[in-house]
Image (cartoon, rainbow over all chains, first blue to last red; front, side, top):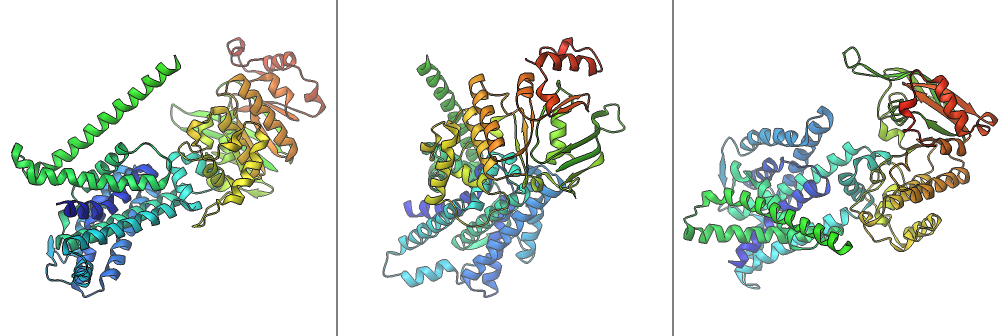
Length: 302
Length: 264
């Protein structure tokens, strides 16, 4: 059970890192995610079926996601479309594109196909207990991705992207085009989401166009749980760690809902409702927490 | 340096809401000028700054910088050589980043690549520059700017702008949102920096005595036009009384209502 939650939490954790970049760092609520996640899955599956090397297929998925993000950025920047609508436009178009990539099918299985995961499992089987192989693999993958993101946001370019999410005028005053920064940020974010989708497809053993439905809500809920857990910080390393931890916790909650939900007559169909309610509860708790802090501060001052 | 020729800015042209924010502005700013600008609300002071900074493009007319036509150049490109400070002290810096990060971002203008420039040498340099502000900020490099006061943030914005060596600086009532003590400090710093680095500057103010005390040239604006332009000795001889009287003479309509807006 724990391995299952961890593996799922970490696979989707990569997506959560992408969502964290757009929602929290860029301050750009990007809904492209619902399309770029299955895009990554579709590209991965189709590449594997064509006999492409797994890691190369992962790169293809990554760049597919990057392009999806850039399209959203271009729509937003040049047509002056609000950011939410730009994301929805790309997401809607991606639905058709994903079906095309999957060869006009909505669901393509890769059960007996050789994947990165099956490769790793067969290689390490024997040295490590089988059930822990994937867990260990994804711990490493997620940490590497997290560290790369941390490094990126400590470079000059990364810092300016962070500052833009906070204060766009400041970036303009520094002689930098905020449109360029948004394009880079959205590309990076959706690339990560597609990688997450590619891993999810291998883990699940199929790619499905519906894989991304509501994924943005899962991502957002995970980010919020992560923020809720740990004190506010301005250190990017802490924030990305929170996002990963939030993803694991979120999947733990979902796991419980899926396997023990029948106790309260819950079906898997109710999970989306639960996700939404979870976000609302988190919002309420955070707000009342802020209020409490404010009244506390006022009292201290008196 | 900056030459504005026959520039007009008309919002909602051809509709009932047509608004002539600036009309036939002709202005030559010389290298080393420190111009103060006064005028009541809606006189077009901020629109003039928006025009120079590139936030808006003129409906008609041209802007040249050192002989180069920059009328259609976007704001972010002009920002490479025009520094600007806003009334809102939060607009110059990023709240959720540390002082060191903020200084690194504002240190060099233009697009930045995947390089990590913030090292100990850079930090020491920033600290040595921060000493000039006499606010003790040099020991708070790791703190979030959220923890800093408006005056500290405005002083910091000013320092970072000066260090990037702009050809022209625009100060848009940059002390108006601060308390009197901090406003005084920031204004003194402004004056010191302008003299020390020989900056060409333009400053909007609502305070007549500041407008007289600082700078070598004074512009008075009203209803989208420059109605009074004085420099050199003539400016030195100005007093608040004379200026108010001048304002009264030149204005197009009653000025009693505006007395409150222009503090002496």
